[in-house]
Image (cartoon, rainbow, N blue to C red):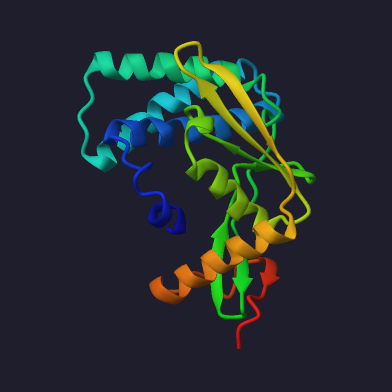
Amino acid sequence: MIVKSLFSDELRGTAIDVLFGSAFDKAMVKMNYYYRRGVDNYLEAAVNYMSLAMKEEAARMGIKLSSEDEGRMIERGGRMLEAFQRTPAFGLLRPKTGLVVIDESIGMYVQPDFYDGDSIYEVKSFNPAKTRYAYYQVRLFQLGYPDSEAVLVGFDGEALDPIIIRINKMDEEDRNGIVRDVAEFGSSNGIEGEPNRDILAKYSTGRG
């Protein structure tokens, strides 16, 4: 929510872009699961899963894909899944959604794509270096993992070579600034949070 509010100019992708990104994300998570379970031909299995996920997403979004469009998207997705194997996020599992609490009254959900106990990983289906929001999103996730560095992964143009951007732990100045952003957004737009969610971290703005 806060990312959409702050970076609406960057989040104007077409419905096809959204569909592809969602299907790729599901296939990427499934491929890591297949790999960890020792599934033979895990890459092929993940590409097949992406094809099914794409059909389901298209139906949900009311998009009618031509066979040519679907074929191009699956071909691109397969190349990206193959390239994903060359990133440090390959083989990791997605953590459960957790909650960051600010001033004991404002909550924000955080769920990076992957976590290995030391670093969090966020994977985009494009070149994240060309956006501002991807970096900011990672910083938001680091509120829930304050002792962790981060790795932002994406893919470069037509070659689809993996892009790996390493991000240091947040310093106090950055952390305080983002905590204030979240507090201001939460005060104006409502509060996220469920009592049964695991609380990952708590912060205070020092107000009141």
